[in-house]
Image 1 (tube, one colour):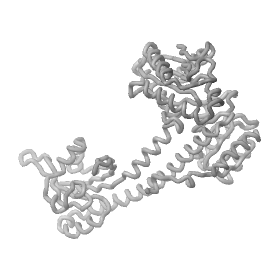
Image 2: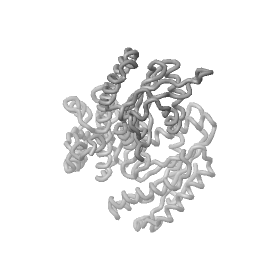
Image 3: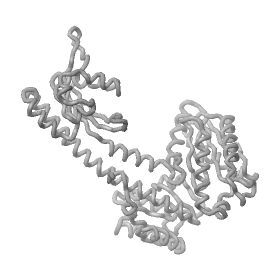
Image 4: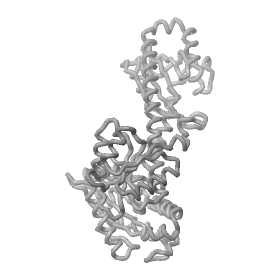
Length: 466
């Protein structure tokens, strides 16, 4: 199995620093993490934490916000201002009854947060998710450095080939031997021009190595002198052909990534094409492993670890972009804040595993309810979800809210402890705005939050519009 794309549990285990001025909280988190094979360090205040970090850099920090002398925001600010420690991921800790400025937490560099009292499954899921992301980042950084070095070596090789262009044409037998031993796909092609206009019509294959010939499902000798390049490019990416013409006519090298289905498998490649006489030489490298790793890393960074829908970070980035777009176009932007009614009672009665399953089902219902690619469903925190509806007016948003209510009621997930129904229900706050200049999405979020608060106070299992 590929070592890059498969990370064992042993590799994921790392050193975690817990910073909390409350000894009971330290003990609970430390025992939980130690029982799951993590190395744990503890600090009772911000100053002690910074001293400990300078001695040994942890893989992850669980940082309480409310502490004497130096609070969690100040500690995180100092960490992010230090080149040595700025890459350490920080998960904030806050009690449910404390005022927690979530926007500020992300602004100072936090990547996630957990609430007291702790839910073991949530803590472990968030810790594991962040450690996975860090491990993937390190692997990707190492591979990128190797790729940069390889690319530099490759460019040097191409430069040497350009300098010996005349020798290439006179020594094809020698070149063929070199190309045959290369692990990259390599070919040299010459321009085929219209006799009247002198415009390039196609490219004739002069030299091709076995790896490149394999793409065409032929032997190298069967492709020499053939006009196969234009047909192949137009079949896969017609926009590339004029760019290859520019390589010959202008002399500017062409370098980019592309994907291609080889034997029913999607493969990613990186190529460099440089002018060679009245044609060009092209070198192609398989980067499928690296590309898949990048896609996997992106997914880990944007998705919620429990429900699989977009996480809070993705929501924050998306609402800012849609806010700016709707502001320019003077279009409405709507937000539904959705909270599962009496979810703590559900967790206490049915236990956390069933609670997690219920959140997953609700997340799926919400995703199935939205209909446009531009709409977004995200886990906002705990049992709270956010539904972002760009270019949607208030009436359209209410229609979506009604669909959500109907879909959740249709699922009829039992909730014997609910005070409003014997099945799971949700309360929703709706806000719609046309963004104006020098304003921020916080306004829309706060309105939806207030509407949600009113919906809860008026009995839950309903939506309120602000």
